[in-house]
Amino acid sequence: MAITLPKLTNSLYQPAALARGRALRYVVPICLFILATAFEFWEHWREEGMFPLLDRLGTLEVIIFGLVGPIAVYLTVNYLLQIMTELDNARQQTAVINRNLEEIVAARTAALQVSNDELAQANLRLRQLDQMKSDFVALVSHELRTPLTALNGGLEVALQSADTLPPSSRRILEAMASESRRLTQLVQNILDVSRLEAGRLTLNLGPVAVAPLLRRAVELIVGDRRPVIWHLPAQIPPIWADELHYEQIIRNLLRNADKYSPAGKPVDIHVTARDDGVQVEVVDQGAGITPEVQAMMFERFTRGQTGENASPGWGLGLYFARKLTEAQGGQLSVRSPAWPAPGVPGASFSVVFPLAAMAPEELEDD
Amino acid sequence: MTEILLVDDDQNLCQLLREYLTGQGHAVYCAANGRAGLRALFEHKPDLMVLDVTMPQVDGWETLKRLREMSDLPVIMLTARDEEADILRGFSLGADDYVCKPFSFAQLAARIRAVLARGRGMDSAEELRAGDLVVNLAARRAQRGAELLNLTPTEFNLLVALMKRPGVVLSSEELVREVWGPQYASEIGFVRRYIWHLRNKIEPDPEHPRYLHNERGFGYRFQAVG
Image 1 (cartoon, rainbow over the protein chains, first blue to last red):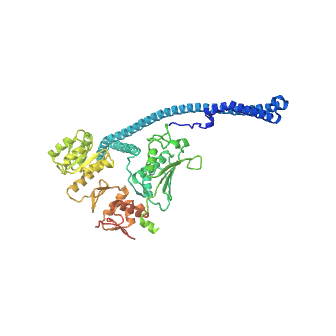
Image 2 (cartoon, each protein chain N blue to C red):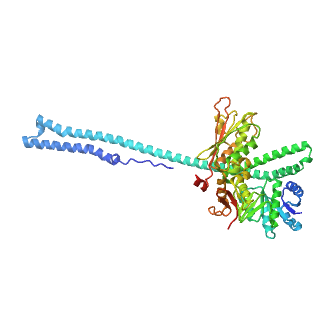
Image 3 (tube, each protein chain N blue to C red):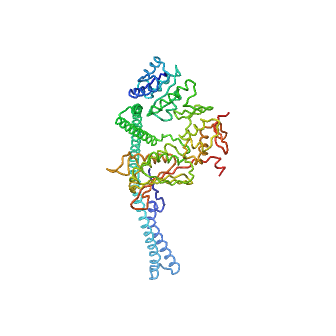
């Protein structure tokens, strides 16, 4: 982008005006001297019949009117000319500075253009790499599905006759079947993440009754391992969501609460019906989450804990949960500490989903 | 005994499926690619073909296209891609059903039963029909004519609960018992909203329902009219 600076155009500062001024500095005083001296000679000749220089008063008059006036004019014009010359110099200097500035701006603009082009190129390369990564992930996940089918199916066939197997073989096969199901779920999650990022995840939206889904998820994830304290309002309006993905999000939050809570400590579930949606809050009594971890825990491949005490996991769960929530018009947030007592900071994860539109007959009844 | 031709390049999967389906009372032939599959078709004249999409040489799409030029043999496609565009492509080429990998063998067996029953013009325990609505219980898929309906799992269960008893008025409580479970029988508040959204998805004109009727004060009735 080139910048054009305004030029000084006032005619006072033009060199021609200055040259005229320099000439007038001599012409005007000389004319004044001749006129004044001639007038004095004429006046004295007419009144006294003699030339002024022959008496003292006449000489004084010729000096005062014929010389002092023109000298004063000369000095004034000269002074003005000096000011104008200085202004002219300043103008010339400004013009030089302007020119330099324009050159600098042009050079910088060109450099910026080069940087912009490089940045655009780098962006393009990054996008291509990201696309390649997504394609690769999708390809690998697809490729994994065929052997997974054989693996799951083989275990299904083997376990059909589980009664005839020795107990140890049966236990091993059941453990393998459970791990194989987990692997299948992981592959599905990775595929879903890559689809979500590419904007290709198809959502199947409809009304979802929150309470039955929550109870089912709690039964499955928490079971009898720890108490669950429910805080449910009498009426919860159905939300508008993809049922399977909503359950996936809820299960993820429950699994985290279960994973990071000390054994035997309860998990609290608060459900609040709001004007803009239904909020489900899962509150644990774990070690809490520091603000630094909170700031990055929704990124890909990060986990609340690392090191030997960390629970197994992929670090994809919360990232996916938030992405999925946002894709359905909901919000997922974290608050920690969740409890006032310093010994039990805990963490609270909350999801808010919009309400399913009311049926016309419900509106009539209201 | 029904004869099934299994066309898939994954030999392990073929072997395991052959074992499973044989145990279910089917005779199973295997072919490793589309060309071999079409040859085996003439040789064995099976009752149904299970066809993998991704194969070397002649792939599943091409095989299905060539097969449909000469036969209306029921075909179930197997694929590792579960995007809607692929599923629709399968149906437009004349597939009878579509199973995404990884699938459970029991689910495939149920779908084989459903497709075979439909092929014989028999009422299938795996399929419900009313007007131009077709609900495939094994595939958990609902269609109105050729259009695939995007129902959530609960909407699907609700529709099935209503369709299984055509002409009968079911109260909200009965529906909740059947769809969500008896422990929620007192929470009938959300049924109306489910019904309304379901109607929006299945009815050609939700203002004048053809299938799902309100019996004010009593409940809901499924009946295809008009």
